[in-house]
Amino acid sequence: MANLRKVFLIAGARPNFMKVAPIWEEMKRYPDRFQPVFVHTGQHYDDQMSRVFLQDLELPQPDIYLGVGSGSQGVQTARIMIEFEKAMDREKPDLVMVVGDVNSTLACALVAVKMYVPVAHVEAGLRSFDRTMPEEINRILTDQLSDYLFTTCEQANENLSREGIAGKKIHLVGNVMIQSLLRYRQGAERSPILAELGLNRGEYCLLTLHRPSNVDQRETFQRILEALAWIQHKIKVVFPAHPRTQKQMKQFGFDNAMSQSSNNLMITDPFGYLDFLCLEMNAKFLLTDSGGLQEESTFFGIPCLTLRENTERPVTVTQGTNILVGTDPTRIVKEALDILKGNGKRGEVPEFWDEGVAHRIVEVLVG
Ligand code: UD1
Ligand code: UDP
Image (cartoon, rainbow, N blue to C red; front, side, top):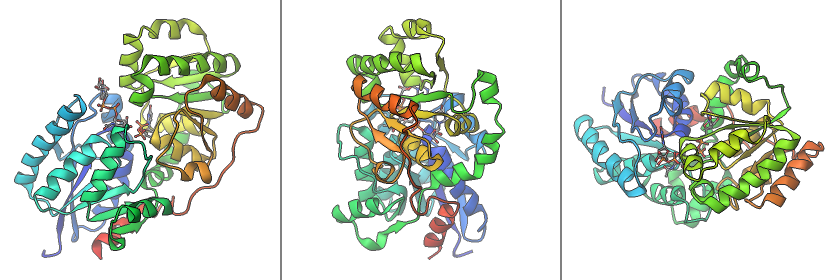
Protein backbone atom coordinates (compact mmCIF):
# COMPACT_ATOMS: atom_id res chain seq x y z
CA MET A 1 0.00 0.00 0.00
CA ALA A 2 1.86 3.02 -1.30
CA ASN A 3 0.11 5.58 0.90
CA LEU A 4 0.42 3.71 4.18
CA ARG A 5 2.55 5.72 6.60
CA LYS A 6 4.22 4.26 9.67
CA VAL A 7 3.85 6.91 12.38
CA PHE A 8 5.76 6.87 15.64
CA LEU A 9 3.52 8.38 18.34
CA ILE A 10 5.72 9.41 21.25
CA ALA A 11 4.77 9.58 24.93
CA GLY A 12 7.20 9.81 27.81
CA ALA A 13 5.76 11.67 30.77
CA ARG A 14 2.36 11.92 32.50
CA PRO A 15 0.95 14.84 30.49
CA ASN A 16 1.72 13.08 27.20
CA PHE A 17 -0.64 10.12 27.48
CA MET A 18 -3.88 12.11 27.33
CA LYS A 19 -2.55 13.96 24.27
CA VAL A 20 -1.52 10.83 22.40
CA ALA A 21 -4.66 8.76 23.14
CA PRO A 22 -7.17 10.54 20.83
CA ILE A 23 -4.63 10.64 17.99
CA TRP A 24 -3.91 6.94 18.38
CA GLU A 25 -7.62 6.17 18.29
CA GLU A 26 -8.21 8.38 15.26
CA MET A 27 -5.31 6.92 13.27
CA LYS A 28 -6.60 3.43 13.93
CA ARG A 29 -9.70 4.44 11.93
CA TYR A 30 -7.57 4.77 8.78
CA PRO A 31 -5.75 1.42 8.54
CA ASP A 32 -4.95 1.96 4.87
CA ARG A 33 -3.35 5.38 5.59
CA PHE A 34 -1.63 5.04 8.98
CA GLN A 35 0.23 2.40 10.88
CA PRO A 36 0.59 4.04 14.31
CA VAL A 37 3.39 2.73 16.50
CA PHE A 38 3.12 3.70 20.19
CA VAL A 39 6.54 4.59 21.59
CA HIS A 40 6.96 5.16 25.35
CA THR A 41 10.35 6.58 26.30
CA GLY A 42 9.99 5.64 29.99
CA GLN A 43 10.77 9.19 31.18
CA HIS A 44 8.02 8.53 33.72
CA TYR A 45 7.83 4.95 34.93
CA ASP A 46 6.03 4.67 38.30
CA ASP A 47 2.69 2.92 37.93
CA GLN A 48 0.85 6.07 39.03
CA MET A 49 2.76 8.21 36.50
CA SER A 50 2.52 5.81 33.58
CA ARG A 51 0.71 2.43 33.68
CA VAL A 52 -2.48 3.83 35.18
CA PHE A 53 -2.82 6.21 32.21
CA LEU A 54 -2.57 3.41 29.65
CA GLN A 55 -5.37 1.69 31.52
CA ASP A 56 -7.60 4.75 32.04
CA LEU A 57 -7.12 6.03 28.49
CA GLU A 58 -7.54 2.57 26.94
CA LEU A 59 -4.13 2.76 25.31
CA PRO A 60 -2.36 -0.50 24.41
CA GLN A 61 0.93 -1.56 25.90
CA PRO A 62 3.64 0.42 24.10
CA ASP A 63 4.93 -1.17 20.90
CA ILE A 64 8.36 0.19 21.84
CA TYR A 65 9.49 0.96 25.39
CA LEU A 66 12.81 2.76 25.71
CA GLY A 67 13.06 2.52 29.51
CA VAL A 68 15.22 5.63 29.91
CA GLY A 69 14.14 6.64 33.45
CA SER A 70 15.23 9.70 35.40
CA GLY A 71 18.39 11.79 35.22
CA SER A 72 19.61 15.35 34.98
CA GLN A 73 18.36 17.36 32.00
CA GLY A 74 21.38 16.44 29.90
CA VAL A 75 21.55 12.79 30.88
CA GLN A 76 17.84 12.18 30.41
CA THR A 77 17.68 13.95 27.03
CA ALA A 78 20.80 12.13 25.84
CA ARG A 79 19.56 8.69 26.95
CA ILE A 80 16.29 9.20 25.13
CA MET A 81 18.19 10.19 21.99
CA ILE A 82 20.48 7.17 22.13
CA GLU A 83 17.67 4.68 22.63
CA PHE A 84 15.29 6.39 20.22
CA GLU A 85 17.86 6.43 17.42
CA LYS A 86 18.14 2.64 17.68
CA ALA A 87 14.36 2.27 17.42
CA MET A 88 14.30 4.63 14.42
CA ASP A 89 17.03 2.63 12.70
CA ARG A 90 15.18 -0.62 13.26
CA GLU A 91 11.64 0.48 12.42
CA LYS A 92 12.16 3.25 9.86
CA PRO A 93 8.97 5.25 10.45
CA ASP A 94 7.69 7.75 7.88
CA LEU A 95 6.65 10.35 10.46
CA VAL A 96 7.44 11.05 14.13
CA MET A 97 4.69 12.73 16.12
CA VAL A 98 5.61 14.36 19.43
CA VAL A 99 3.33 16.13 21.91
CA GLY A 100 3.80 18.80 24.57
CA ASP A 101 7.08 20.12 25.91
CA VAL A 102 8.87 17.48 27.96
CA ASN A 103 12.40 16.20 27.41
CA SER A 104 11.07 13.24 25.43
CA THR A 105 9.42 15.68 23.02
CA LEU A 106 12.64 17.46 22.09
CA ALA A 107 14.91 14.41 22.20
CA CYS A 108 12.78 12.40 19.77
CA ALA A 109 12.22 15.36 17.43
CA LEU A 110 15.96 16.01 17.26
CA VAL A 111 16.81 12.41 16.44
CA ALA A 112 14.07 12.15 13.80
CA VAL A 113 14.98 15.28 11.91
CA LYS A 114 18.64 14.26 11.71
CA MET A 115 17.52 10.99 10.16
CA TYR A 116 15.50 12.96 7.56
CA VAL A 117 12.17 11.83 9.00
CA PRO A 118 9.49 14.55 9.20
CA VAL A 119 8.27 15.63 12.64
CA ALA A 120 4.77 16.66 13.70
CA HIS A 121 4.46 18.64 16.96
CA VAL A 122 1.12 18.66 18.73
CA GLU A 123 0.67 21.66 21.07
CA ALA A 124 3.14 23.79 19.15
CA GLY A 125 3.70 27.51 19.62
CA LEU A 126 3.08 27.85 23.37
CA ARG A 127 5.55 30.28 24.94
CA SER A 128 6.09 31.42 28.52
CA PHE A 129 9.01 33.63 27.39
CA ASP A 130 10.83 32.28 30.43
CA ARG A 131 13.99 30.53 29.34
CA THR A 132 14.75 29.29 32.84
CA MET A 133 12.02 26.66 32.29
CA PRO A 134 13.39 23.49 30.67
CA GLU A 135 10.04 23.19 28.88
CA GLU A 136 10.45 26.56 27.16
CA ILE A 137 13.72 25.40 25.59
CA ASN A 138 12.02 22.16 24.53
CA ARG A 139 9.13 24.10 22.96
CA ILE A 140 11.26 26.55 20.98
CA LEU A 141 13.61 23.91 19.62
CA THR A 142 10.94 21.32 18.83
CA ASP A 143 8.97 23.92 16.89
CA GLN A 144 12.05 24.88 14.88
CA LEU A 145 12.58 21.22 13.97
CA SER A 146 9.00 20.37 13.07
CA ASP A 147 7.36 20.05 9.67
CA TYR A 148 3.79 20.05 10.97
CA LEU A 149 2.95 22.40 13.84
CA PHE A 150 -0.46 21.73 15.38
CA THR A 151 -1.61 24.55 17.65
CA THR A 152 -4.28 24.99 20.33
CA CYS A 153 -5.01 28.71 19.93
CA GLU A 154 -4.46 31.78 17.76
CA GLN A 155 -1.76 33.17 20.05
CA ALA A 156 0.37 30.08 19.44
CA ASN A 157 0.13 30.73 15.69
CA GLU A 158 1.32 34.29 16.27
CA ASN A 159 4.27 33.12 18.36
CA LEU A 160 5.36 30.74 15.61
CA SER A 161 5.03 33.34 12.87
CA ARG A 162 7.13 35.75 14.95
CA GLU A 163 9.84 33.08 15.13
CA GLY A 164 9.89 32.86 11.34
CA ILE A 165 8.05 29.57 10.92
CA ALA A 166 6.27 29.36 7.56
CA GLY A 167 2.50 29.76 7.77
CA LYS A 168 1.88 26.68 5.65
CA LYS A 169 3.38 24.45 8.36
CA ILE A 170 1.08 25.83 11.10
CA HIS A 171 -2.36 24.32 11.68
CA LEU A 172 -4.74 25.57 14.35
CA VAL A 173 -6.53 22.35 15.31
CA GLY A 174 -7.49 22.94 18.95
CA ASN A 175 -6.68 21.26 22.23
CA VAL A 176 -6.30 17.51 22.10
CA MET A 177 -5.97 17.24 25.90
CA ILE A 178 -9.51 18.60 26.13
CA GLN A 179 -10.63 15.99 23.62
CA SER A 180 -9.45 13.30 26.06
CA LEU A 181 -11.21 15.04 28.91
CA LEU A 182 -14.48 15.02 26.94
CA ARG A 183 -14.02 11.39 25.96
CA TYR A 184 -13.47 10.28 29.56
CA ARG A 185 -15.65 12.76 31.41
CA GLN A 186 -18.43 10.24 32.03
CA GLY A 187 -15.96 7.65 33.28
CA ALA A 188 -14.55 10.27 35.63
CA GLU A 189 -18.03 11.09 36.92
CA ARG A 190 -18.38 7.44 37.91
CA SER A 191 -15.11 7.44 39.89
CA PRO A 192 -15.60 6.56 43.57
CA ILE A 193 -12.74 8.81 44.65
CA LEU A 194 -14.78 11.50 46.43
CA ALA A 195 -16.47 8.91 48.64
CA GLU A 196 -13.16 7.10 49.21
CA LEU A 197 -11.52 10.32 50.43
CA GLY A 198 -14.61 11.49 52.32
CA LEU A 199 -14.99 14.65 50.20
CA ASN A 200 -18.04 16.60 49.07
CA ARG A 201 -18.42 18.50 45.82
CA GLY A 202 -17.22 22.11 46.09
CA GLU A 203 -15.87 21.66 49.60
CA TYR A 204 -12.17 21.23 48.92
CA CYS A 205 -9.29 22.77 47.03
CA LEU A 206 -7.12 20.58 44.78
CA LEU A 207 -3.38 21.32 44.81
CA THR A 208 -0.63 20.09 42.47
CA LEU A 209 2.97 21.26 42.44
CA HIS A 210 5.98 20.03 40.54
CA ARG A 211 7.82 22.86 38.78
CA PRO A 212 11.52 22.84 39.74
CA SER A 213 11.26 26.62 40.28
CA ASN A 214 8.70 25.97 43.05
CA VAL A 215 9.72 22.70 44.66
CA ASP A 216 13.50 22.55 44.17
CA GLN A 217 14.06 25.86 45.99
CA ARG A 218 13.51 25.67 49.70
CA GLU A 219 12.47 29.35 50.16
CA THR A 220 9.91 29.26 47.37
CA PHE A 221 8.45 25.95 48.51
CA GLN A 222 8.27 27.35 52.05
CA ARG A 223 6.35 30.43 50.84
CA ILE A 224 3.79 28.20 49.14
CA LEU A 225 3.44 26.17 52.34
CA GLU A 226 2.82 29.37 54.28
CA ALA A 227 -0.09 30.17 52.01
CA LEU A 228 -1.30 26.61 52.35
CA ALA A 229 -1.27 26.85 56.13
CA TRP A 230 -3.78 29.72 55.87
CA ILE A 231 -5.94 28.17 53.20
CA GLN A 232 -6.32 24.87 55.04
CA HIS A 233 -7.89 26.74 57.95
CA LYS A 234 -10.73 27.67 55.62
CA ILE A 235 -11.14 24.66 53.33
CA LYS A 236 -9.87 21.10 52.93
CA VAL A 237 -6.89 20.78 50.62
CA VAL A 238 -6.20 17.61 48.62
CA PHE A 239 -2.59 17.42 47.50
CA PRO A 240 -1.60 14.51 45.23
CA ALA A 241 2.15 15.01 45.34
CA HIS A 242 4.27 14.42 42.22
CA PRO A 243 7.34 12.16 42.83
CA ARG A 244 9.71 15.13 42.39
CA THR A 245 7.74 17.01 45.04
CA GLN A 246 7.64 14.05 47.42
CA LYS A 247 11.41 13.77 47.10
CA GLN A 248 11.90 17.48 47.78
CA MET A 249 9.52 17.47 50.76
CA LYS A 250 11.62 14.75 52.35
CA GLN A 251 14.89 16.48 51.51
CA PHE A 252 13.76 19.80 53.02
CA GLY A 253 12.22 18.01 56.01
CA PHE A 254 8.77 19.43 55.24
CA ASP A 255 7.00 16.08 55.03
CA ASN A 256 6.45 15.37 58.73
CA ALA A 257 5.42 18.90 59.58
CA MET A 258 2.97 18.95 56.67
CA SER A 259 1.31 15.65 57.43
CA GLN A 260 0.87 16.64 61.09
CA SER A 261 -0.19 20.23 60.37
CA SER A 262 -3.96 19.74 60.13
CA ASN A 263 -6.68 17.26 59.30
CA ASN A 264 -7.60 19.59 56.49
CA LEU A 265 -4.52 18.79 54.41
CA MET A 266 -4.58 15.46 52.65
CA ILE A 267 -1.27 14.51 51.01
CA THR A 268 -1.50 11.51 48.69
CA ASP A 269 0.33 9.83 45.84
CA PRO A 270 -0.61 11.00 42.34
CA PHE A 271 -3.99 9.81 41.09
CA GLY A 272 -4.88 8.06 37.87
CA TYR A 273 -6.56 10.06 35.13
CA LEU A 274 -10.21 9.25 35.86
CA ASP A 275 -9.93 9.78 39.62
CA PHE A 276 -8.00 12.98 39.08
CA LEU A 277 -10.50 14.42 36.57
CA CYS A 278 -13.23 13.61 39.07
CA LEU A 279 -11.37 15.50 41.81
CA GLU A 280 -10.79 18.41 39.44
CA MET A 281 -14.34 18.82 38.22
CA ASN A 282 -15.74 18.75 41.75
CA ALA A 283 -13.20 21.04 43.42
CA LYS A 284 -14.02 24.52 44.69
CA PHE A 285 -10.81 25.73 43.08
CA LEU A 286 -7.38 24.54 41.96
CA LEU A 287 -3.99 25.66 43.17
CA THR A 288 -1.33 24.51 40.75
CA ASP A 289 1.80 25.06 38.73
CA SER A 290 0.80 22.50 36.09
CA GLY A 291 0.37 23.47 32.46
CA GLY A 292 -2.43 21.02 31.73
CA LEU A 293 -4.44 21.91 34.83
CA GLN A 294 -4.69 25.53 33.75
CA GLU A 295 -6.44 24.31 30.61
CA GLU A 296 -8.62 21.65 32.20
CA SER A 297 -9.88 24.08 34.87
CA THR A 298 -10.73 26.61 32.14
CA PHE A 299 -12.71 23.90 30.40
CA PHE A 300 -14.54 22.90 33.60
CA GLY A 301 -15.15 26.57 34.52
CA ILE A 302 -13.44 26.06 37.87
CA PRO A 303 -11.25 28.88 39.24
CA CYS A 304 -7.53 28.15 39.02
CA LEU A 305 -4.81 29.98 40.94
CA THR A 306 -1.53 29.34 39.16
CA LEU A 307 1.53 29.44 41.40
CA ARG A 308 3.76 30.96 38.74
CA GLU A 309 4.75 34.42 37.50
CA ASN A 310 4.08 33.54 33.85
CA THR A 311 2.23 31.05 31.71
CA GLU A 312 2.71 29.60 28.25
CA ARG A 313 -1.11 29.33 28.15
CA PRO A 314 -2.22 32.98 28.38
CA VAL A 315 -5.59 32.17 26.80
CA THR A 316 -6.54 30.52 30.11
CA VAL A 317 -6.06 33.93 31.76
CA THR A 318 -7.59 36.15 29.07
CA GLN A 319 -10.56 33.88 28.31
CA GLY A 320 -10.56 31.25 31.02
CA THR A 321 -10.72 30.91 34.79
CA ASN A 322 -7.00 31.15 35.46
CA ILE A 323 -5.22 33.80 37.58
CA LEU A 324 -1.42 33.97 37.90
CA VAL A 325 -0.73 34.45 41.59
CA GLY A 326 3.01 33.74 41.77
CA THR A 327 4.38 32.51 45.09
CA ASP A 328 3.73 35.46 47.43
CA PRO A 329 1.64 34.01 50.30
CA THR A 330 -0.35 37.23 50.82
CA ARG A 331 -1.43 37.29 47.19
CA ILE A 332 -2.26 33.57 47.12
CA VAL A 333 -4.37 33.78 50.27
CA LYS A 334 -6.17 36.93 49.10
CA GLU A 335 -7.22 35.28 45.83
CA ALA A 336 -8.23 32.07 47.59
CA LEU A 337 -10.39 34.01 50.07
CA ASP A 338 -12.04 35.84 47.18
CA ILE A 339 -13.02 32.51 45.67
CA LEU A 340 -14.34 31.27 49.01
CA LYS A 341 -16.49 34.42 49.22
CA GLY A 342 -18.06 33.41 45.91
CA ASN A 343 -16.05 35.75 43.69
CA GLY A 344 -14.25 33.06 41.66
CA LYS A 345 -13.26 34.01 38.15
CA ARG A 346 -15.59 32.89 35.38
CA GLY A 347 -14.53 32.32 31.82
CA GLU A 348 -15.22 30.80 28.44
CA VAL A 349 -13.87 27.76 26.64
CA PRO A 350 -11.55 28.74 23.76
CA GLU A 351 -12.47 27.83 20.20
CA PHE A 352 -11.72 24.29 18.99
CA TRP A 353 -11.24 22.84 22.48
CA ASP A 354 -13.61 20.07 21.47
CA GLU A 355 -13.99 16.49 20.30
CA GLY A 356 -12.73 17.06 16.77
CA VAL A 357 -9.05 17.82 17.39
CA ALA A 358 -7.49 14.46 16.48
CA HIS A 359 -9.68 14.30 13.39
CA ARG A 360 -8.42 17.71 12.28
CA ILE A 361 -4.83 16.57 12.81
CA VAL A 362 -5.32 13.43 10.76
CA GLU A 363 -7.08 15.39 7.99
CA VAL A 364 -4.02 17.64 7.68
CA LEU A 365 -1.72 14.62 7.48
CA VAL A 366 -3.88 12.90 4.88
CA GLY A 367 -3.66 16.14 2.85
C1 UD1 B 1 8.46 16.36 33.69
C2 UD1 B 1 8.53 17.43 32.60
C3 UD1 B 1 7.54 18.55 32.93
C4 UD1 B 1 6.15 18.01 33.16
C5 UD1 B 1 6.18 16.91 34.20
C6 UD1 B 1 4.82 16.31 34.28
C7 UD1 B 1 10.71 17.81 31.53
C8 UD1 B 1 11.88 18.71 31.46
N1 UD1 B 1 9.86 18.03 32.53
O1 UD1 B 1 8.90 16.95 34.90
O2 UD1 B 1 7.49 19.45 31.84
O3 UD1 B 1 5.31 19.04 33.56
O4 UD1 B 1 7.12 15.90 33.81
O5 UD1 B 1 4.60 15.50 35.37
O6 UD1 B 1 10.57 16.94 30.72
N2 UD1 B 1 10.24 10.45 39.32
C9 UD1 B 1 9.85 9.27 39.92
N3 UD1 B 1 9.03 8.44 39.20
C10 UD1 B 1 8.60 8.70 37.95
C11 UD1 B 1 9.03 9.90 37.36
C12 UD1 B 1 9.85 10.76 38.05
O7 UD1 B 1 10.20 8.99 41.06
O8 UD1 B 1 7.86 7.89 37.36
C13 UD1 B 1 11.07 11.40 40.10
C14 UD1 B 1 12.56 11.18 39.92
O9 UD1 B 1 13.18 11.46 41.14
C15 UD1 B 1 12.92 12.26 38.91
C16 UD1 B 1 11.95 13.38 39.27
O10 UD1 B 1 10.77 12.73 39.68
O11 UD1 B 1 14.26 12.67 39.01
C17 UD1 B 1 11.65 14.31 38.11
O12 UD1 B 1 11.23 13.60 36.95
P1 UD1 B 1 11.48 14.20 35.48
O13 UD1 B 1 10.83 13.38 34.45
O14 UD1 B 1 12.94 14.48 35.29
O15 UD1 B 1 10.83 15.63 35.55
P2 UD1 B 1 9.42 16.06 36.10
O16 UD1 B 1 9.60 16.97 37.23
O17 UD1 B 1 8.56 14.86 36.27
N1 UDP C 1 -3.07 14.38 36.35
C1 UDP C 1 -3.47 13.12 36.82
N2 UDP C 1 -3.17 12.78 38.11
C2 UDP C 1 -2.53 13.62 38.98
C3 UDP C 1 -2.12 14.89 38.49
C4 UDP C 1 -2.39 15.23 37.17
O1 UDP C 1 -4.09 12.36 36.08
O2 UDP C 1 -2.31 13.25 40.13
C5 UDP C 1 -3.35 14.73 34.95
C6 UDP C 1 -4.13 16.02 34.73
O3 UDP C 1 -5.53 15.80 34.73
C7 UDP C 1 -3.64 16.48 33.37
C8 UDP C 1 -2.18 16.01 33.35
O4 UDP C 1 -2.10 14.97 34.33
O5 UDP C 1 -4.36 15.81 32.34
C9 UDP C 1 -1.25 17.14 33.71
O6 UDP C 1 0.04 16.65 33.92
P1 UDP C 1 1.15 17.39 34.77
O7 UDP C 1 0.54 18.41 35.66
O8 UDP C 1 2.00 16.34 35.37
O9 UDP C 1 2.05 18.08 33.65
P2 UDP C 1 2.03 19.50 32.91
O10 UDP C 1 0.68 19.66 32.30
O11 UDP C 1 2.37 20.54 33.92
O12 UDP C 1 3.12 19.37 31.91
